[in-house]
Image: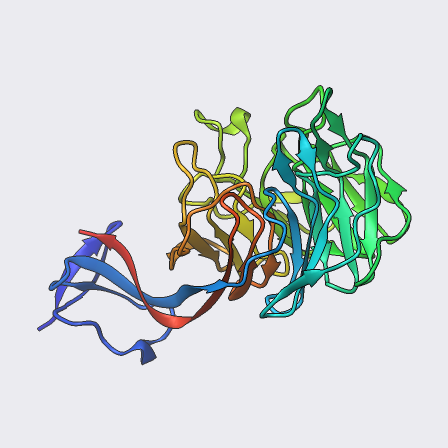
Length: 336
């Protein structure tokens, strides 16, 4: 006769060794040898990739694991870069420099990016110098150069940008004098329009999806947490924001899969209020589950390339590039 172990008021099978993965995603059991609850789910791993030539942090990254671009970044000592680089799945090569911003060195950091390597979008950002600058422009990238900017209502940095070059959403961010804005704007390929605001102000969040099926998650939102960070996720349907599954770890400035969906998303690395971490979580449309941690803990990441199962991380602090991939396997849920 089978024996059972209680979890959250329910009883699951207890076994001495893990059964076959063929059980199917979502099956749960208790392994008496390791004293852990386990399940069949997505199990991910990371591999090191060639790093960018420019090792600035808070660089805006978008695209896929085999065709991405990264632009801008902070060099330190009140110095920003305009550099753009492109990734082909193996190497990074120089792309067209960003158009100069209205600060002395023309560079920017803490901006956001979305789209593809040949149809990308870059929005907002900030710069430091004798004074602090915040920018209210977006630029389109065609794989070689950046087009003339479109302007949105209020300058901001550290916003969440998701969608396509011709149908994007810019949500939240830092917009002085408001350090955590809730305003949201949509882009149609030529101009920006104010739409339904977030339920609360937030910045440095993860994000991904499309203009009619997107989401933001994590980040900084002091109004929602006794600490500085939040785990709250919000789904967007093109009109309204609704609550999604909360992250198990509250953190900001992590790597998110910009081409992910509301039912398949990755959020990795970042800063959890105490330390820079390598932890990673995958979202299935309802809840987040821990997956393989990255090889290197990093924060100061802006957006990310890839999907919820094949993703690219680059441009953080410390500067390094890693690729993520996942497949169905046995995952540990918790210890007894």
